[in-house]
Length: 309
Image (cartoon, rainbow, N blue to C red; front, side, top):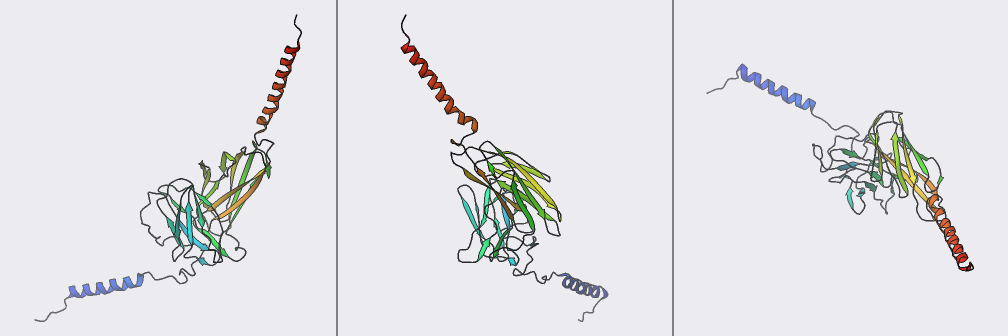
C-alpha cells in the first residue's frame, strides 16, 4: 500500500523545519575575547556559575569573588584563606579566577591571598575585614599584581586621622574617602574598618548609606556609587590606656564592591603615654597618697613628742 503525503502532514513537516531553523539561529555562541585568559578585569562576569553554587539563595553565610591579576586577566590557581580568631579555611581560585567559601558564621573574618613565595605574584590587600550575613551575597574581588608597583586602581581610597599624635583618653577621628573613577557605576559597595587594639569605638557616620558597628568592626553599606561619586565615612574613636611606653596605632580600612578589586588605606597615630601609661587623672593618685601618708606620720610624731601635762 502506498502512503501519500497529505496537506496536514506537509504542514507538520514544514513547521518542524522552521522550528529547527529558529533554534539554530538563536542558539548562544561564545563571545569573542571572553575566554579566561583575556576576560575583562574592570567588569568581571557575574552570570557564570560558581563552583559548588546553586541558583537558590544561600541561607548560610557565604563569601566569593574573583582573583584578578590587575591589568591583565583573572588569575587561576591562587590560594585564598579566610580566617577567624582561632581557625582558618583555604580555597584555590578555579580556571576563571573564582573562589568560594560557604557555611561561614556571622562573626568578623579576615580574607587574604596567600603569597606564592616562589612566584612573582603579590597581593594588593592584606587582612580584608568582612562580616558575612545569612542570605546576603558577599562579594570580595581580590587583586594581585606583578612587578614593582601595581597599575593605577579604578577607585581612589584614602584615609586620614584628626591627629598624628595622641594621649590615652584623647579622641581621634578618622575620615575615609572613596571616589569611583570608573565611567560606570559600582554596586554592592562596602567599607569596613576593624579597629585595632587600643582604640575604643565612639561613633560612626557616612554621607551615604547605613553604618553599623559590632565586635570591633565598623561596616558602611554604601550600595551603588555612580561614576565620579565620592563618599566619606567618619569614625570617632577613643585612645585607651596601654602600658607606660609610647606606641603606634595602625588603623586600616577596606573597600570592596562587585565590579572590580578591593582596595585598602591605612593611617598611623603615635600614642604618647605618661609615666604610668594611664589616663591623666589616675596619674595623680600616687602623689596624693604620698602626701596623705606624710601628714599622718608627722601627726603621729607630734603626738609622741608632746609633753605630758
